[in-house]
Structures are given as C-alpha cells and as structure tokens.
Amino acid sequence: MSKIEEAQEILRALGLPPAQYNEMAALTFLAVCNIKENDKWTKATRESLGV
Image 1 (cartoon, one colour):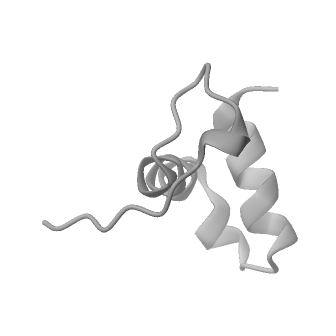
Image 2: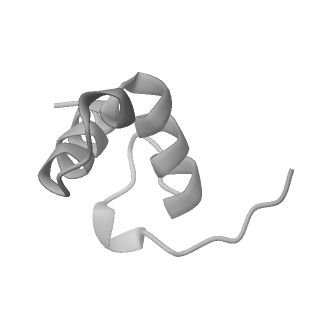
Image 3: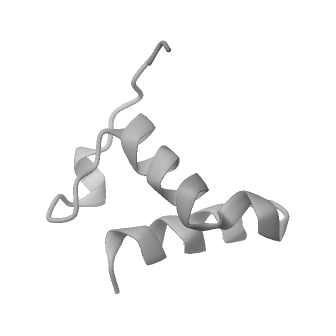
C-alpha cells in the first residue's frame, strides 16, 4: 500500500467525509506530517506551513 493510500485510510478512519480523503487531501496530510513515500509513520512531525 502506498503512503497516499495509507493517508487516505487514516483520514477515512478519522471519520472524515469522502471528499476529505481524496488523493489531494491525502497529499496535503502527508505534507503537513512531513512524510515522504519511503518514510515510516513514526517519523511524522507536526509542521506549521504557511501559504
């Protein structure tokens, strides 16, 4: 399972509506957690990102 799929499953498990666990939401979640495809979830950090 890819990190995107894992992120989608986490978002789904949190009870978010389907529109909130699509691929873009999963990618955003990974970015906020500072997780890349080959990283372990234990490496996740809370990042404050600005736009």
